Picture (cartoon, rainbow, N blue to C red):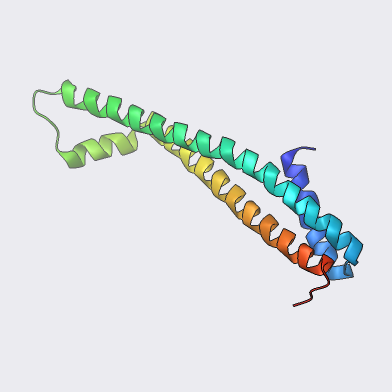
Length: 133
């Protein structure tokens, strides 16, 4: 099952549990399922975190190259403000920064899913133990 499908399936199970209720047996199974989902999210989170870090390094390298190029183009070094504008207006920098922003947003979403699944696991484990606090 693809990761997105797993998340959607678990979201539906959470919704179904509060709309229709859940038996102790089902709660025990759901607790295990959400624990397994945490393992899956953890794996995806590792990939996403690495992607974000690599993109961040790439953005820094691109900015450094463009900065260096801008400094070497003229006899007089441009001001820091001018260099900042050159970097911000560069299409390559903009594209890579957008990719970094998207990668970081995806990583943050995975962190939220991990937290949700952790809470769902604890919730259903409590139900399975007969605790309805």
